[in-house]
Image (cartoon, rainbow, N blue to C red):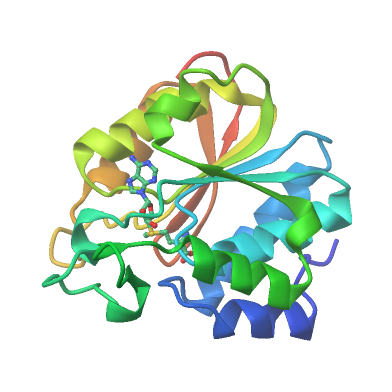
Length: 217
Ligand SMILES: C[S@@+](CC[C@H](N)C(=O)[O-])C[C@H]1O[C@@H](n2cnc3c(N)ncnc32)[C@H](O)[C@@H]1O
């Protein structure tokens, strides 16, 4: 079966959006989302930022007839704050002097014609996960990259991945010299594999796709 790929307009919207995901990882993310969409359950992303990866998930969800939920407090991760390497001054709300990526995210989705596929959950991931109680076909972990945040994302969202559903982790860097924001996502990936509940499906760049093949986390 051919690997599902986004149409050129969707790929162009992805490439035009602010964000950090390279194209090869985006294509792997898209293919995984299309596959998981066949379960007929919502797809969930932790770490919306300006909507770069959300565009791909939303198009995959449209194909499958499901909804994407995307979680972010929109105040940026540690490494995106002023003075840090991944800071973009355009993401700061001049009125309050704090990052606010929500307006840019909304423009990204609007321009891609994908607003109807996406529900944005604006808040802290563990707080939302604590009140979440329904199965998901796909969970993409790309939020905070500290052990505290990445670990909480795994604990909060991985339990909701349905049997046969996919858990996707971004920025997995097994070699310390390759990492740029810490190795917490790598530790989440190892934890998921070590749980016996998830089996690796594919690795593309720093993106790891795992499938739920057992119970628990
Ligand atoms: C690496 S960026 C996401 C990049 C995005 N997926 C893309 O492809 O462009 C991480 C995002 O996670 C968000 N974030 C970090 N910790 C969070 C938390 N505890 N709850 C909600 N959002 C969080 C930040 O605000 C930031 O926008």
